[in-house]
Image (tube, rainbow, N blue to C red):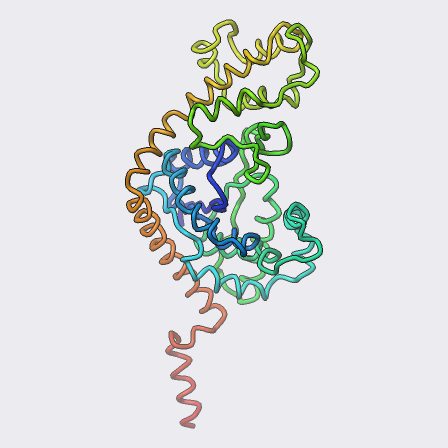
Length: 362
């Protein structure tokens, strides 16, 4: 069996630069590498409902936004199957079976779950669906027999939970049905957690500190020019700090030597610019103007592709429908193998039926 990728996003809003540098750009590279036999990218609406159950329209409306972002960055439906999670009902059935293989105490020890619960203020009242989403995630991964799951370091506990479920299932039912996945961690740590424009934490839709892939140039300008820098860098001649300065973090993620040659030939590269900023004499506005040019250069072709796909929304839904059909067929095959291993494939087991007939004839 060749290598298979499973990854995806929750449709709780448009995708932003954090998604782009953290996963989307890498997905396009992996898609075009020829290294993978199959690639599945899931719009995880069922998972998003675990903490948005009272606002389904939010999820419904953002399915198309995420799909448009996928297509605009260069994900190709001829190479990648993009699908909607909730439509692949086999995933729900697998989740139910896997739930018997995991204890409550094990879920409580999952560091990612603990962090997410705290972030959403669920400490006193945790929805069961949210609490058990590591099991659902294991279902998503194993349904497609994914060998590779691109994730950030904060998601490693989730992958390990999946590996435990795979081992438990294969051992319990004496079957070699499920595949243990490997995590694919970003090689560029700068890109793994892009901060928000306010310099706090990571870029997050809920914090309102995002630059979205679909933002027009004037909106990007407003966001970049108001970005957090060094609060002690008041006068141009003041020495400035690069560390913790969101503008330079973004330049680390996006700027190339070619960008300097095109937009700011005063410097050969970012290292030279950082040194000038540290010793003083370089203003924040100049740095932000460079960043603005760099980001708009990156986003220009993405915006253009999105505009083209926006002209035919039914065609985008058709791409999702076809991708979901492929995903359902793959998941159905895995579910069939799982049920056979668990010996609950009653109507497909001719030997069972014949054996029972002989039992009652004797």
